[in-house]
Image (cartoon, rainbow, N blue to C red; front, side, top):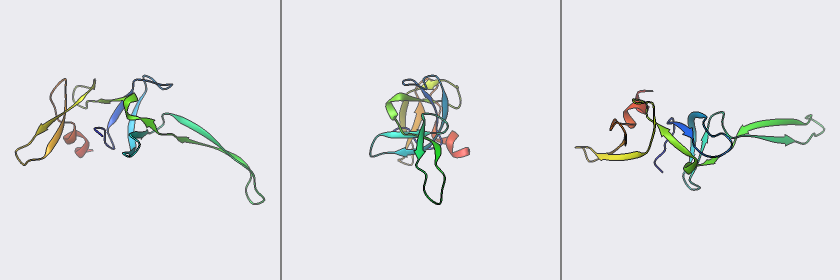
Length: 108
């Protein structure tokens, strides 16, 4: 999966289209991510003898294909490319401005 934790993403499909947020968790097995304060769901908890009933709101997982990464340097939504470094590691880059996406997330 090309999107990692702490990336800023913008939703391009679904009920939250146009909104942006930070990735809090990635679910690699299902190809889904959880973005803070987006794709909110409500869960109703039944009352018991010890606890009253309540409603809980939480962030539900959304498919990775519904979001695009926002480049920290050019502030535009972009696709992700890769560049091989001299050390042999791969680095994620912005396809529009060719700047690194990994350095920006490492600084924060």
